[in-house]
Length: 295
Ligand code: PLP
Image (cartoon, rainbow, N blue to C red; front, side, top):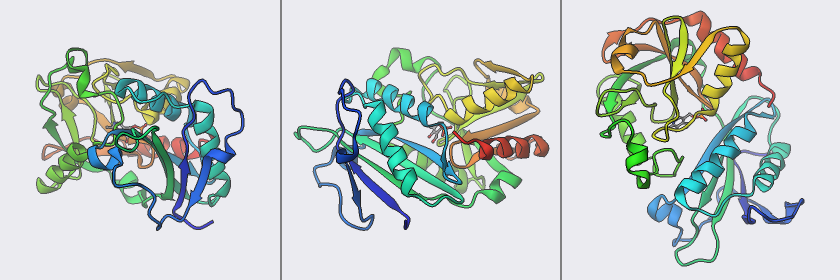
């Protein structure tokens, strides 16, 4: 099968009693037009998505990604996705994808066409960029004020902070700002100085001998890679913790990583222009574990 691979999906309701979804999948030529101009995903970024990694034919963390899609749909008041249909769509694609190397499989649920009757959904798989160098050598990071205080999700739920929406223009602007300042990536902090997440990743630090990540309060995404990494660390007898991280604690940490589904774990090597301690051995152990997952 040639890449990219594209599948259009007719979403079925969450409470459907169907067990076979094959007639709701339509394989597409990836170069052919597929969406209508009235699509609210393209007009307003009004939709949600997930990106998971497929390594040597194994799709990784399928259930956490589907759960997060369901959670995002609830936050955005989109029709609730049918988990069995998404599971089947991912399996349909993986059956037809190359069984070697690393692929990125993105799946999208949009509010659909303006005044249209139904949401639109699709899945798209491509070969993943080659992240070996960045996994080995890490990233230079700047902190950027996200402009909101801690607790924003509770006081302003309409900001959809905990949903993985298609509106990534701000996240991409933050990466451009990092490049402008001679760095590679960003860690968003709240206006009152607490660590949030990267524009496309979760933040994990090692502080006081424990691995710590910001509590998934609704203001950030609950990262599937971070959860997987915590399972690995706990099984290895390490202490893990969800809690608020003041930015000064990040600065004093003895290591920090940005973790995400396709790039996996990358070490922070520089923070706001100052050298940052790196645990290269741990980083390669993390990536060996993440790449070795078969589910
Ligand atoms: N936070 C944001 C804003 C993201 O976009 C991502 C992934 O793209 C993550 C965190 C990490 O999530 P995951 O590990 O599930 O890829």
